[in-house]
Length: 598
Picture 1 (cartoon, one colour):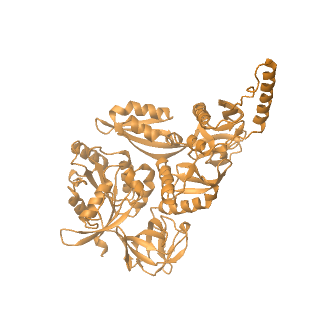
Picture 2: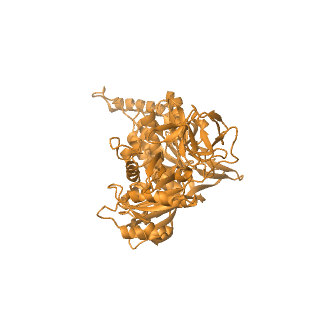
Picture 3: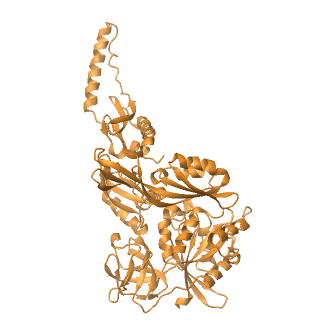
């Protein structure tokens, strides 16, 4: 295949704008998939993706299209997720492409995530083809959405393609535009090999399979290759192209997308974003466009049974191959034993990882309260990274704490502005600007502490706006904040798994909530249990779990009252002694309930 007949592109869109449906139509019209094998969301191969209707992983597939001049073109579609938590997947897919289809829903218009992915594509100088989808819907606002696209990217009105991925209308124009507008890849097949590893998966029989986009050079079966960042060397046991299955080939040259199997069994030996080159004739520098992932949310993941610790480690290693944004390191907890401190891109990412551990590896886990990374400064001027409440220095040493701040962009209908503003101000947000995109749609820019959006922000935003608000954010640095460590104590003993870092203004509310919940969940003992929330030595909330009492006066019938009093006094002394030496066991269920993300 000549390099001028290759087109590499991705589809960028907000969730639910019809990206997977358009991919299905492209596969169908290029006859990559037969009618018998066709199913909705053909590229979404996880059950989880089908159930939730979202793309979690970026997928790659090769198609062949016969253009009207009779020439056959090779299309490499690298599909991308739409949710803000998976923007890291998008950045890798975009680095491997020359063009992108900007897909906008005719019934919803441009959403926050579309804009953010569009800017990412523009940074990489990609050719943008705007496509308005769902034009067959009765409530489609084609003219209005056209104006929004013209304002956003400043193209000609003739450049916008009107399509319906569901009915197939306009999809032939999309295929023609890919040939006409997206440039062919640049690259020299005779130069030293330079290939970007944009994804990888673990196969229990074949080891790690790396997905690559070749920028320069030619890769042949049996070549000796080296990974640039890890420095490890391997033989190319099998190479090939990605259709709905792996199709082996003898060689892959510049501009093409494919896979390589080198028999790697250890997932840590390969890094997504690495550059692949030949051992004998290496390239001078790695491919640009790869960046290290920065987790936004941290949580501890612990096995329910401590004997499963090593299995959990293996499961996380295999999951990281397929999800390069997952970061983890070992951690121990007095209450939960051995586990891992994991970094995630957001709450949806955390939920998906938990779900995948359960489904793909049969691992049931306990997740601690998610928190974000802070910086603590001591009075001696030391700067410490704080990922768990236990990392926070003693108040006598601590000078101040800085928390991460984000710049949030919310696009919504004008009628919901009041409710959204109230929500953001409750979350300690500051309004930066308010900009009307059209008379009925408005863009709000807020500065918010990351810790405040970690829990229920997204759900509440959706319910206030009846699902019409779209949300996207970027990191905006760190700022000093009045944060305190909230300890939960049972009979004076702190329970480390339940401690949290919270803003001083909300400490009392959170403390009361946890204490109330624990009172409902803890089993009653033979002695009274004090459930307290404290900041340092100051108790800010308390609930008392009363003791189970045995009726010691049951055997007294008749006689003097002093006989009953004597027995009750004896019982009282016993209970007092019990409380001094008694241990409170916190059942697993109580941990799970308190740590639920409400």
